[in-house]
Image (cartoon, rainbow, N blue to C red; front, side):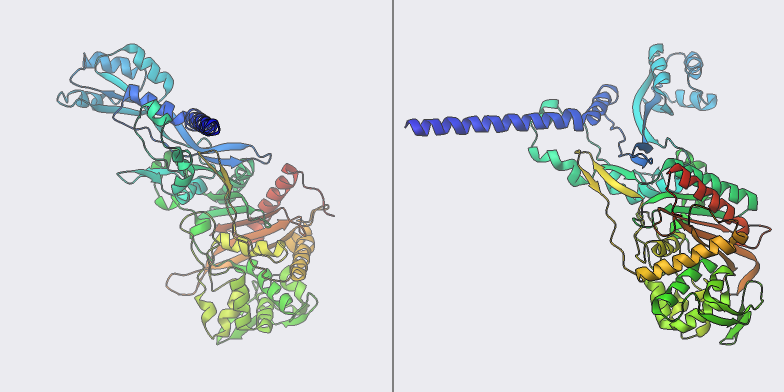
Length: 568
């Protein structure tokens, strides 16, 4: 009997201890993890219990020291409303309110005249200071209600990447960028007010409800200072050359982490409704495809080196122009160089040399290499509306299509796909998946790392090292006649100038070009790859004139900002 009694006491004691522990955990969850939510709901209970406050997870930049910088958050303020039935002297009320918050006089008196309507909203997004001043006036028929709205502290910085929250007429949700891609993570359930003790004693399974619903905050690899430098540079390029569009990407070629993703012109997500051309809201780095031109030549050369059909010293006779399938293509200047080695194909960006390498590799094998580099497929970046490349010309039996492709014409890819393919050259031949988010921090306090898919080994490491060496030679001796060379840092880079195709397959314009440029550094163990492009610059023909110096400026900045050690 005594043993049974002791057992029952111990069981009851254990149950009490477990209950107390669960109570403490639940109390912590309500007061700390969900503290802000309950504070908001309490405020709404006192101010306007019929409504729920807008709520949404934040998005953060990450600076080079690992500090989180707010990119998208919530601003708190008030809505000013009147009850025309209870309104006192309309003229006096207008005068007093207008002294604090500017009001449209005609609209105010029209709303004040609706005596049968108990609720008319006048102004949204009123500051706490202004709201407090209105409350202190104690005007009959005048009320303010607490509200929250989406706010972007950095303004236009990374606007096309962050996106914005907009209404479809019924609900607010992410419309572009990360706001849309991570909608299920950022959105939060609207809940009414419950008694505190009913919440406290709710089922323990609710402790993990936030994480199972996916509610959380998105932490990105976008470095705000780097992003600012990139965007300032893009704006300078766009304005100087009156380009239709200019874009740029800065990422880690080994991990795929995106440090900068910029477009000019861009927009401020705080004022997205002011944009006159809706196309500016999209992200052309992700959802538009272009024929990229000569920056494809390093991929062609890499295929030749990898298959062993050429080496850097292999020579060919350059006639200046070649004809295949009754179609003629030429070097950029139409001139032949005679017998030259493969290094000169890159140094002088010879279209005939790229076609020579492609022919040695073979059409189908060359197409397979481009496919392995990710040309023609989506990269998998965590941004919405990504487009796949258009590579139909690589599925025909005509030799001319493959020759054109060898120097970057006849097929189209997104800038992010092109940057990804080129990054593989600096990543010892291995493809990566570019990604903007690095972590998801759930409301429960748990944090989950965003782990992109492991990429394929496209070319052998020794091939990547050799093409890198050749591209370093381009910078050191050929690009702007060697003026791009840095004494203590190796840079692998290449320009691209592509003719822009006429609509409907009518050939190419003679005076419209897309300029592109890529480079990675330090070349043999790169920290960054920088990709730049500008569409239809005016009064200039070659990418070396528009993008080489801006690239060097960005490279110098990154080397100094991150204190990168010299590699030579």
